[in-house]
Image (cartoon, rainbow, N blue to C red; front, side, top):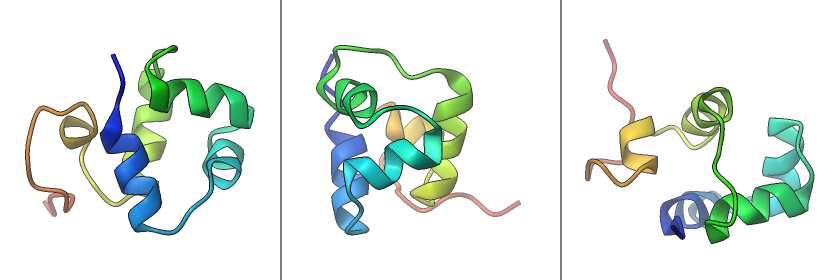
Length: 72
């Protein structure tokens, strides 16, 4: 399933796929496949993305609406 939230969060922060891929230690092509839905993101990489994008994993997985990470 295509994940537009990965792309939206990345573009809102003016980040390139190459930059995000480097932060995840994957290739740009692998990260592009996360965005296109051709490949599933590991839980470890979901955690890294949520920190990088300052949002929750639930938001990235389209399970909630607020983008801001919760502070506990």
